[in-house]
Length: 546
Ligand code: G16
Figure 1 (cartoon, protein in one colour):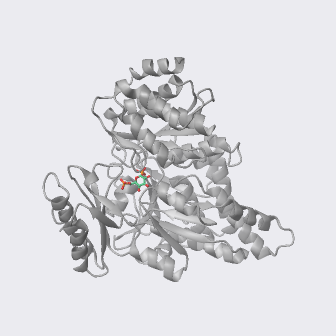
Figure 2 (cartoon, protein in one colour):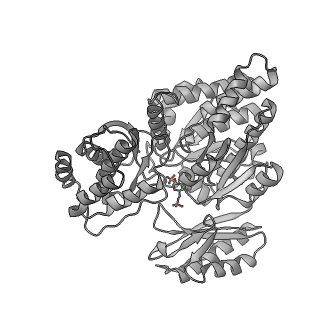
Figure 3 (cartoon, helix red, strand yellow):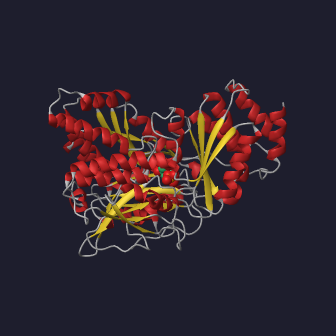
């Protein structure tokens, strides 16, 4: 077939280094950019097949998100804007690792297994972040699409969640919104303005001010682009806008969350609200410093609490009986889970790391609020929930209070990007909630107190020796590791710890929380040592933090 000849020809321009093996991880392929050209070409091929199979537009985003500038990666987006299904993650890994001479066989294997009609049209949307390697790597994706005769639309520089949004809009024939960047800003900002103008007319300019750390990445460019749509209802001071600093270096959501300190490159005045995006703007964390200079972090758990409390109150005011749940991962601070379950009385679920897992768990409820502690998350409304809210908002016989609550819920739905965690959309939602409730960042922070915690990384020769169960809360291999962790945890009060192989970096992640910071730090160090000794640590032994 002519298509396969074209694939053969073009793939020789994007050859696979012999022997290189990469896995589709937590959020796609991710490694040093110099190893990724063939992966991108092949993901262009795979996205084209996926599009033929689903008869819908598929997205391919070139980004390594929170990783350092020299890395890159690729995330595949399914028709409704969600992450690609697990079966196709498997195909992605097979196709990525087929040696050069076996590529056509691997491709034909997928076509056969999935009974793909090769004469079906294919459409692929492509986007990229600001990394210097992203331009040529996204071209490789486009080459892959055209080699199989697919149509592509190159959105150029976009945030990951913007591309997810475009794919969903395209496949719902505009019902979710317009598949343009302008359409995205218009929908989100209009909903934000409705929420903030109508409900919080007393807001002062000080309360409308927010400092944003753009991680020197795509989020900074897009915040600038969006600003005029906000009509000064939100006044943003943008830092780390990419004009001088390096992407994610000492800044961005991952740095702030893991290091538990403010990013460099930002002016923080005591008490002022600040937030940080990550490298592709799908995560956000908030923070402030108090008058003693102490740093206070409001992470994904605090965000989920703020949002779910707000939604629960509105549901009560609207008199709507809808089931709301919060989905977290093992990284969720123990205090947040207790607060949500015991005080707020909402259902809490725990899944493995990776928004794809949280997203699916959240789909089981009328309203599913999902957030990873690292600030990656969003809210999903079922079709039934959206319809009930709309009916109420439009019911001419409804009393004012219930109607007002239903209208607030409608605008809340419109400000949210339901396809995936989105720093820009989350920021607008959080700002609107704070304005509506007349709440300061300090009051939000005081909802509950986090247990002190620490995250560390350990280098091992092969992180796959660590296998976990129970939503990653327990290790089943290597032998003896979980027993060692259990013994160490018992030495500390209110303590918990777990380890898991990262799906985006070549490290094992260690999490520990305990009654005091000293205790959390020493537990994290002791568990790191156990990983180092039992799972084949490389380099120097982990050193104590103090
Ligand atoms: C990705 C995933 C997140 C995950 C994070 C870290 O984020 O989308 O769900 O929490 O990686 O994963 P891991 O601990 O496996 O390295 P991002 O923002 O980097 O795409």
